[in-house]
Image (cartoon, rainbow, N blue to C red; front, top):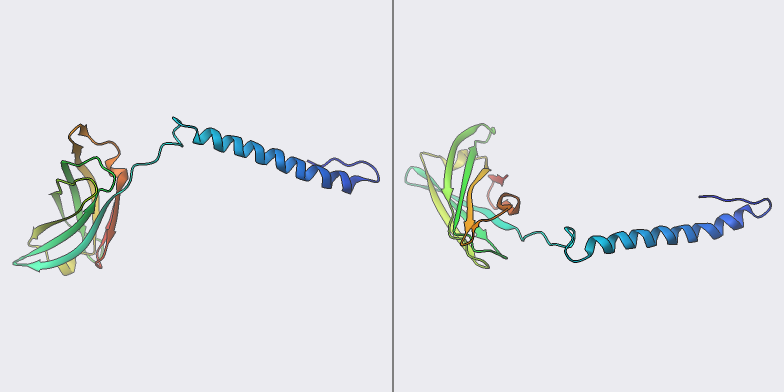
Amino acid sequence: MRVTMSGTGRRVTALLAPALFGIAALGASARAQEAEAPGTPAAEEAPAPISIELNKLEAQDGACRAYLVLVNPAGPDITDLKLDLILFNQDQVIERRIAVGLSPLPTGKTTVKLFDIQGQDCGRVGSVLINEVMACSGADGEIPDCTKRIAPTSRVDAKLFK
């Protein structure tokens, strides 16, 4: 906002600018405090991510053995976790679809799960898509937002993503 008066326009504008900035800052601060007030959605922290890392792919007697490192840092304990995985080759053409069970996944513990993919050449795996979380539950039933909490990473050339 600019207010000018003859002969003193620059001075009035210079005086009003800090005042208007201060009013705007107070309004922004009040909105931030409202958002952080207890019981409001912005104040509630998002649940900690469930880390799933594709750590190793290894040829094993006509199969490709996959090693996953999982961490559920903040719980609750996961007693049933099943994922629908899609394997893509180096050209990003679907090779196969598999379902894997990764339970249990206790709170605060790093867990390694491995599974064999029969008839799969590890060298042909270009990426792995977590297509769907088929089950995610604990002692108290289904765990909400399990799919959103999954944070996939990979230490191998094949990318793990959702």
